[in-house]
Length: 391
Image 1: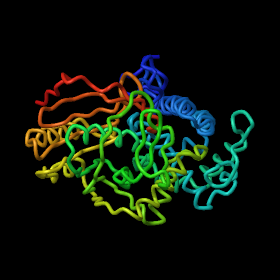
Image 2: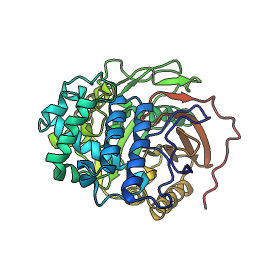
Image 3: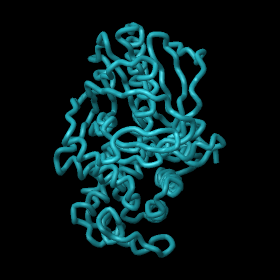
């Protein structure tokens, strides 16, 4: 089987760790659409296990078999057999089911979901949980299908550890207030990252009493000592989620895997912080967000995104790159610009990449798994860091 170079779903030689989705060749000769989709579900099952969700690993493996057999999974996914690999169809499916369990509409399944107060099944392969999930697909398939056209809106709070470390580097380069912007921001929870607590051998940030604690989130080389001062927070998303509403909180929680209680705890803590710290969140494309950013004298403008680029078309990626280049070209010693991202790499894992202007100096600060924790920071770059060549 030939592996795609787009997104790898297993540990790589880099030691960075697995990513969210499995990277497999999306078509093979004489393969039906159903068999292709089942194969992708199985690879996603492996990725879920490697990222700490044996429950989703079991359920997706069984769903793949049910799909090939023409069961309820096939009917729910019909019309989506040609979806792009990067659409993470399996996680859209499970998100819709999880929402039903969280809202009390799938009590038999909720009994096996720790996120709903249940207990994950100890039997190998989770047969009883699968029976309950299959019943949900059979009886409430149309409701689940409504989730298949939406990109997952996890707004992973653990990824804030990467942003905070990058902000430490930015503030150390020039001690100026930070105007923080994010594209593909979902609910904008990580715009409030400076109000989270993160700790580890590489340093710490914030108040230990914060509702969000990213414990042991910073490993590797010590981060520079600097003061992070965020004075403005703005973001865009094509379909932003309002974390102040019950519906918004349900949507975000549904995309967290139900047997990963640490992730759920961080998300719920971020809801508390969001009520305390306002942020500007708009329904718009990434290029529109970047186009409205203006560099201000006496401050950093910092643009950030995480596990977002995979959802963009080639044209949208080019638009984003052009917007970043224009902001970089406008930067001065007083009105500075930084571009930070945590994105999946073809080499495996997710490097934390920072470029600062004026100068256009690009460096990889560290790396993290797809859900963000822990970040392993590299030694600080030499003064001759690679210059980013933007064209």
